[in-house]
Image 1 (cartoon, rainbow, N blue to C red):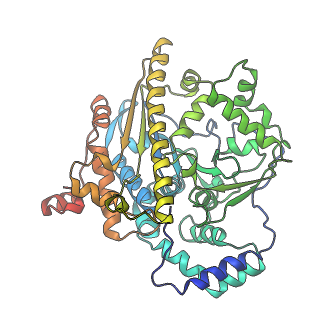
Image 2 (tube, rainbow, N blue to C red):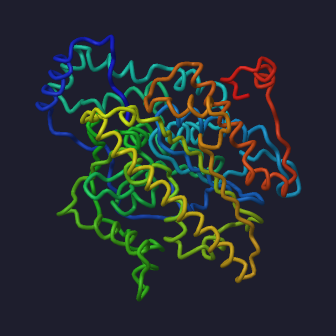
Image 3 (cartoon, one colour):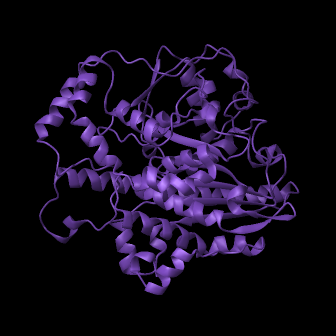
Length: 473
């Protein structure tokens, strides 16, 4: 969870006053608009006919939660993919250009959304506009501003709306999902959590069809805020549910699931979520919070898409150009800091206990997710081979446990989960992402199979010559 303690802030009474003032806020009017019909070939759909052309490789990236730590680590991975070339369609191409989809939660959603909107511009200004900004400190200062109190008292403007406004103006430039060039960029799946059900909520038109709403007109900043809205620190992002007022039951996945006599547990869960959205008398509003609560890795969204499409064979057949191999790359920014209370007989405080319990549960769920994904990948590879499609799968997980140096491992594991890191910490994370990817054995096999050429920047060469531990050598 984000740490919103500012040592230089005014007394705690000011924050308490702000929270009390927000109790007087006006009735909130959700910004999402309704639709009367759906069209799976248009809008921000996974199978839109407007999707970018595919190469010889199907690549899915998954960016985990973890505040700026996750955003910087995933940004470093994008740099490495940009600077490494492989064979595809009879020519040399950047691995980054072969990426088909990015699934993200929380901190990772900032990087995924920015790349989806601006492409290679991310390598020119993302560090300046977000990674090296004191975002957390700025939001706290805004909360302590009397102008914010006044807006909170006479409108529905709260901490979440303040964050949306800041991200919209300073990071995402007022862009909506309609501004993402789906014909040029990977499909970006930003994931949040439905607070009432605990289920994952993905900001795709496929999901918005279920609630009969238009994703194109929604700001990207609102989706990213929902994906990173840590409960208590931020009120939920609220959407109006218009489910049942359009022809969403014509969606292929709905018809497919309803026609089956027996459903697997994952299929039943997908259908249950759809059916629940249709009953607006029970769920007229959706309250969305941090995506890390339902899946802090973003991997399950990728699996669910395959399941909803009827399995891996149907998914493979949906490719305009069937891939020769499939790479699933997880950028996992989870940390495992040492628990100080384990060194003492003194009982941990309430906050330490809550933090330890939540982090332990997330870590266990992460492990279960990774095991599940590995099992499904093996199953998919066998199934496709049986249907005459000998496709090689690669699963690459990048995490801080992979560092061999104890000092470097401790450095990364003690980085906070916040929206404010020093420039040195950000630089170390960027270089760390590149190093972890470059030295991953499974990734090296993928490169070898496709004549991949590694690259090392001059900046990294200087770091290597200086033997600076923060440069990861």
